[in-house]
Amino acid sequence: MEIRFDNVAKRYKGNYALKDFSATLGEGVFGLLGENGAGKTTLISILVGILRADSGTVRANGSDVGTLGDEFLADLGYMPQYPIFYRDFTVGDFLLYMGALKNLPPALARSRAAELLATVNLADARDKKIGALSGGMRQRLGIAQAMLSDPKVLVLDEPTAGLDPGERIRFRNLISRFAPGRTILLATHIVPDVECIASEILLLRRGKLLMQGTPGALEQSIAGKVWEAAVDMEESQHLAERCCIGNMKQDGPLFILRIISDECPCAGARPVRPNLEDVFLYFCQGGDAPCG
Ligand SMILES: Nc1ncnc2c1ncn2[C@@H]1O[C@H](COP(=O)(O)OP(=O)(O)OP(=O)(O)O)[C@@H](O)[C@H]1O
View 1 (cartoon, rainbow, N blue to C red):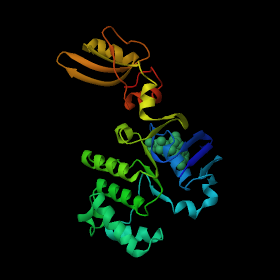
View 2 (cartoon, rainbow, N blue to C red):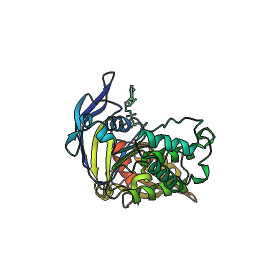
View 3 (tube, rainbow, N blue to C red):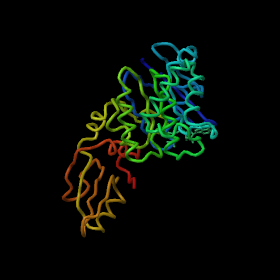
View 4 (cartoon, rainbow, N blue to C red):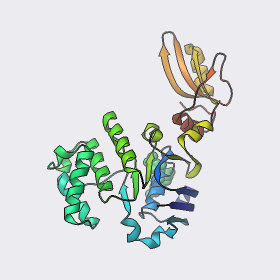
């Protein structure tokens, strides 16, 4: 399915949360990356029909998603940033309930629920009440309900918040396996969540789309602007005041700094290959400005 946003804008009390947002998503995993407050949830809420845009259009295969209504919703799986669950439901009953809301035949809902509970590592928790689950288990249940109807479009808002490293990796592999033939939009500000699985990244800053491209293309766009230098404590403090420092690691008396800078930041600095986190820092923290 092709999802196309044209000049989408949304304001809250006069302030733009999203401005002139235009982008096209085809099949694949699309990582929506942006700092806190960039407008990710606002964009997602417009796509899934929770919010109305002030202006602009969102089309699925050429038809306005607003006029498609249920037809579009039937193809959609959605996990909100803060899923709200009925605490007294058991995990299994909750998925069957969601299956009923999505009009799935009961037998199909039962088999999909069993399959997905195994996939998200919750099979043993099927009879547990949701109120007794840990935060990470609830998060995984949220992912399972979003995939229940085998949707063509899967929209996940911060799906890995609260997952431990093992579960994050399971999640990434699950999404990669699920992706063929589908459109997956995954909003996050955690770069590794999308770095290895996204076919394209959309970089959002202050409600505007800064860039859209493959992770490799985005990294290439800042080639020659990422440096590594081994410096003493005093020099590291000077550099932190005038440059964006991506990473700082102590190595004996020295500090190994990863520096994002248009120019060579200090004597002895050597250019290194950019990664997506560098891209995020370069564009989302305002280029050469100190970032941390
Ligand atoms: N209901 C609301 N009323 C007023 N302002 C809002 C409302 N919802 C969002 N905003 C503002 O709109 C902007 C975008 O918020 P949004 O939640 O879309 O960002 P986000 O990228 O999802 O952020 P985060 O990563 O922190 O979840 C922010 O400045 C936020 O304060």
